Image (cartoon, rainbow, N blue to C red; front, side, top):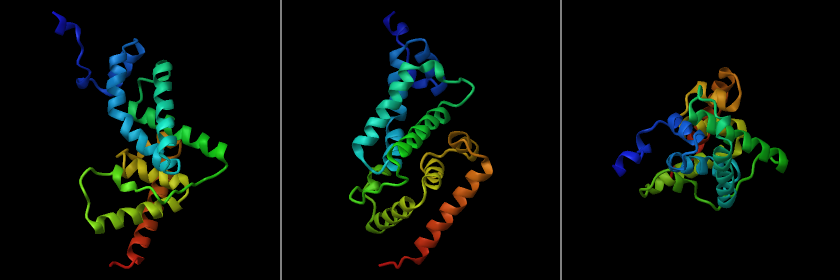
Length: 190
């Protein structure tokens, strides 16, 4: 009888989890947190200057907003688009408060967030080069690139997250890829 009362939230969609959270179910929040904490941490880490504590703080602030104000969620939108819209807006607000468009800390190793296995030395160099070049881009190009190629969002979803026309998103992705391709092709290989 006790098993009937337990809900297995692992089978719920993100949107159903948000409905459960709106109804006050803390276990649903735990599952949603489990699904998104690493992705959002990585996003904040990349967008806010490669600072572990800043990324951690922003991620926690975002989830605090989700749990304190679940009624803000529009069930007509995919949860992933909605939560990354919040993350994107938090970053924009942080940029304004810092009065800085880009902060880079080259001592951190960005590839440790990409995969768990040990990549080859050549792969390490390529990843470092890609992120080094990506960090030279303005935030809108970097955001579009990360949302597309790291998070796997569609052009439509990125357009909604960044509050930009689809054509602008496509243009930013095109120029980000072109710049990366130029830099990678002009870099001598060892």
